[in-house]
Image (cartoon, rainbow, N blue to C red; front, side, top):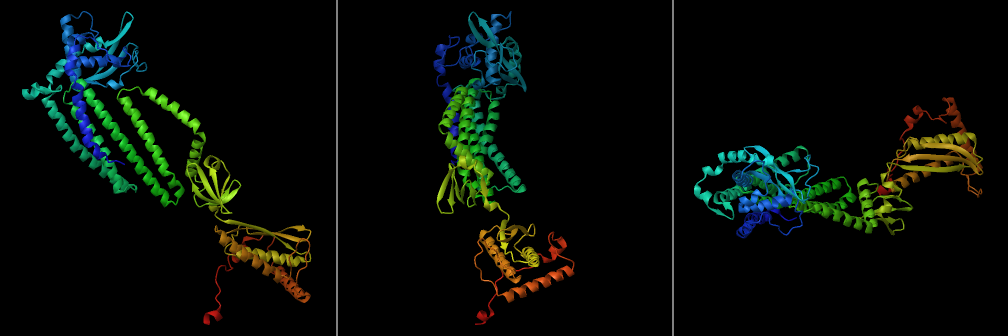
Amino acid sequence: MLKLSRFYPLALMFLLHSLIMPHADAQMGRVYAQDVAPKPETTENIESPRYMFRQFLNIMKREDVPAAVNFIEFPKRWGSDRRQRTAEQLIDVLNKRGRVNLAELSIEADGFVNDNQPPDIEIIGQVIVNGDATPITLVRVVEGEQKYWRFAPEFIDQIQGMAEKIQQSDIEANIPPILVKHQFRGIKVWQWLGLFLGIVVAALIARILTLVLIKSFNLISRRFTIDLTAEMMRGFVPPLRMLTGLGVFHLAMDSLDLNLAIRQTVQYGLTVIFTLALIFLALRLTEVGIAMMRLSFERQGRPGSAAMLPPTQKGLKTIIVVIGIIFLLRDLGFNVTAIVAGLGVGGLAIALAGQKTIENLFGGVSVTLDQPVRVGDFGRFGDIVGTVEDIGLRSTRVRTLDRTIVSIPNAEFSHMKLENFEKRDKLRWTTTMILRFDTSANQLRFILIKLKEMLIGHPMVMNDPARVRFTRFVPYGFEIEFFAYIRSTDWNEYLAVIEDLNIRIIFLIEEAGAGFGFQGAPMMLMPDEATLRERRAVVDEKIKQMEALGGFPLPLYPQEWIEPRTDLLEFGAVKKDTDLASG
């Protein structure tokens, strides 16, 4: 971003230009001194308050008292001399204490209709004398088929009193006459000196106030642990210095008794600089805000969200600049209603033409902010299973299990059923096992109890539910169902646990002297009959011992039976071969 400090000389030159150039045609204006209301080339409504006061400004520049009389609706029974004297006082009062912003005046013939004033009354500003504010009031006068706005009698009736107060507190009485008598471009020497002194003082005070503000921001950021680097803070210095300097200079200018036309022109220059400084400040705030969000996302491990920040920053900056230009045009007196309406129509046309693009853009923003998935997540997205590789402005790319890349438009992706496998806190294990029909009841009881002990004793299997049940008879044996959760979210570790469980199940079935049943009853290599009888006898003896000790824990498996058997098995330990180690 450009440094705003580079614009200080330009801002000063622009301000001086606004002071000097409006008076370049002052001499030419005297040629039209006899015109009551010279008509410039303008598209303004000639019956509007703004048009009326613009013409009166020209009269004030020329100090044309006879012409000023035609813009005043005097109280009845006032003589010609009093009217001339009051018109002269009106010019002096408005020049020294008038506060009118021409750009804020209505351009409609009826004025502002929602200002809580009667239809034929319009307030265009105020006169401030010794701290007292008097509204500058216009009244609409009808002469034949023409309607004119003129200064209202109620306001004119107060002019003499205000003029006397201004004369009593006139600052020029305490200034050397040589500084008051001579002038350049309509500005007296003492006023020029005051302007340059005001600029110097404003610059010094702005520097001090900016330093105080920056120090305050540093204290606040440390107090609330806000991540603001020194570089971020330095970026706020130029726009803050410009804004505070303009505020101080505006206060200084009010005490110099510059005539209203000059103050009006200077106000335009100050408005332009002030609006530009606000735009720079808003842009800087946007940059700092985006930088802080980027740091936050990086610390949270959210690279997908951080990837959306650059386009978001560009969009916000564009909006800020457009809004700033609109406000600047409004402050300069342009009718922004037509501009805003044109932007609305243009925006609608663009929205209709790029409907899908905008839909995908908002879909991408939705996915990024809501974060159902992030870059690197593995899951099922509609009918696609794969890993998210990128979330862009238009589409999301997924690498499938076949190592292909599938691009899904964000508008479609945001409406999909998204199953994020990375969000699992544990993995489910469920399977079934068939025991042959020649398995005895004692063998079946023994196998169920030992399988339950295996599940609750395994450190990688969660006790709840850790379910193993004889569920039903099938044509080729007894079906046993397993259901448990594995304490892992890593798929490779999960497979290792399942492998360990399966091997332990095989050992248990062999220990019980039973066998697996298979559909179609294929031939199986079984131990010899003597070995089977021996194993079954051992099982029968263990069942009798259980009965003698109080019965079987199944089918409910009470908690006092489960707790002493929890996590007793070992998993993952590497058994060293002592022979190999010694050799």
